[in-house]
Length: 202
Image (cartoon, rainbow, N blue to C red):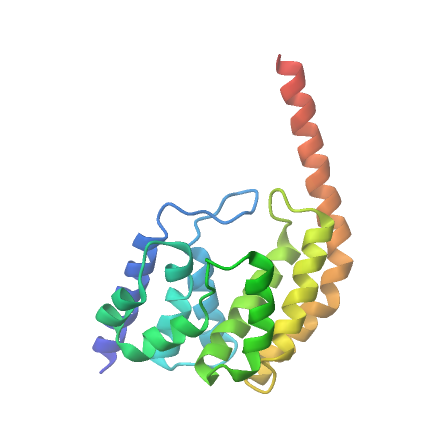
């Protein structure tokens, strides 16, 4: 049993790593994108005490259809119908305008399955912590603040799902505004210095 679980999780990580191999996060270090889904799954196991294999697989795969050439049929073929169902619930329809997709996340959050809510909570927690750590390249203070406000609305519709994650999100949402200025100004300073250095090279 343990051997099969280990094989299943490693196969899922391997699949996601291959799919996300050319992608990078938007931080200044351009860290590999695969760090994100693995981090989301880690939050589920280490902080939320969630060990349901299908939920963990869905966390690892949650961006594959939305951000790569992966299809839902491919997810089902490799990992089963339950994993596919969860991934479908947490995947935005990229054919819709961004603002429409964001609004739909808010509206659909309360009606999601428990498994999808868990993945969404862990995803938001990971992303908000990332914003505390550094401002994404090209993001203004306003954009960071808008993400914070939007994420809070999504999380509101997910409450009552997992207290440890919700408590952690409350802490992040409470302190995030105080960190926006510091990191935004830091990023602005770095970008300004880079501009001057580029100018003097010519």
